[in-house]
Figure 1: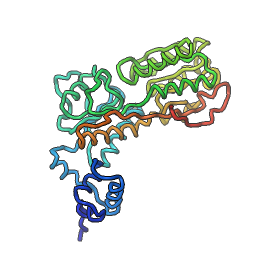
Figure 2: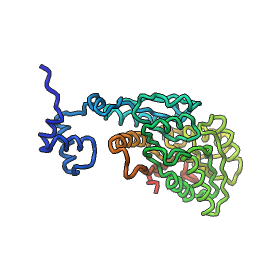
Figure 3: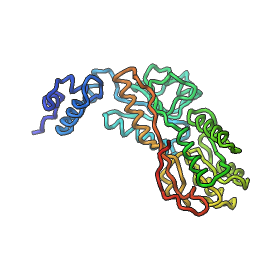
Figure 4: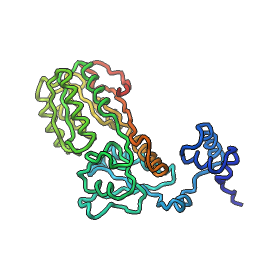
Length: 344
């Protein structure tokens, strides 16, 4: 005989609370104390209780699906695949499904996947017709980073403090002896790229340094990175290079080596987006760990909060990345120690 599945009534009885209180505790809503929420959660876990999502969706007239929008051309980049997996894993824990949305060149065609209950976007811009369609859909939109040009149009956002992270990286390079730090930056058009450019320029001014930056495509080709890095390192006064676009560090190392520069010695190289491959390169590359998977999960959880609360007291959450120091910024044959530094 198939054992009976535990119900919300069972959880409430086991925790000694009302059914309403048990429901509020399991949904993370206000109205119950932290002690009650912990007790209800523990009882639900012990009983093996899980929310009946199909029944809940019927009651709330929801489909139980979330639309995920990634920037064009980024599905092969580790940062965005990690972000996507973070969304999917968090959704799965809540019994939700995720639909990867196609790109639309014409907003007049309407929002893709109109049957979803809300959207998660990342590094989005109002210049993207598809993003405009999502924002005009009437459904909640939660963004990883602010939507560039769309301030106030999303339901909520999880924004990374890139300014503090880049300042920590630049300070690290300076501490390692770098006197002229160049930067390879993405084009203006996302909140991330704007924050990086403004932070780099202001840090250089504050320290009385002659900055040198070059702009490449948001998803640059290997040839584009190689050309720009070769041009930068041909200047012997440049003793450090910061590479912003995801997926570009290996190409930058190769270009510097062909130009006769010794990365980690007479040239320090660091990346603004950490990736698993960075620890395997020669030398391993110092990078800012943006914790993409955690960011994706946080966006999904924030979307659920929007569904439950409709309006949030704090719709913007801030994430603080870490600086992962590796051999590429050792400096004159030194040992970086493979340490982790908070980006503050």
